[in-house]
Length: 290
Image (cartoon, rainbow, N blue to C red; front, side, top):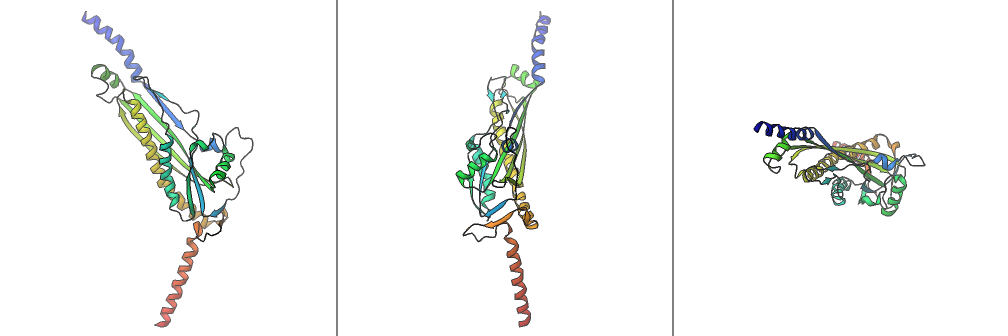
């Protein structure tokens, strides 16, 4: 009788162990600057020209729309679907981190954080010109992301669910990989000025019952870490952009708006020259005095 009972248990448990032991779920959410600015359905081609930057600049910053191909995961244990999409409030918080880098620049007048609802999928530069009219911006920083979450369900998860209970032992391994990218465009010339990427990788564990909650938490952590990494790279790219303008002024035409006397991106070089000339003159006077 015991032998028959054991065989029956094995017949029931083995298929379940095989199914869950090899199962891998994937949740993929992304937004693309390429698909937003250069959609396949566009009737006219984009023809960038030399940017004309009038200082100080008004900069807009926004997330591009999420792709329709983004997928959702389904929790086998609870029957609950989950997605790694971020809310508008969370997006605003991440955009503020990026905006702080522009606020520190003397040639930037103000930053406008633009709600995602104002950006239409595949809207391209026609949509950007509408936003430019609404907010009075000169350039825009477009933020996109690509996040993939993998969940491997091991046999350990099933066995402990059966014997002890799913709330006690973490039996699922979750990997959340995130890429965020900021691309800065001059709207009038349709020319990209510079870009800065940021990445993160979050590894976690969760019991089957709280899997959806854990994945949502890991998703937000992934976005925050990728944004922090992107901000560091953004500072570097801003410096490189300023240096490249000094090295090759033909990349962009720089003028000043009425009432603005700041040096902007090219202002530090004349100031340094004047300082060196002043020091040279003072040194000569001091030498004559001696």
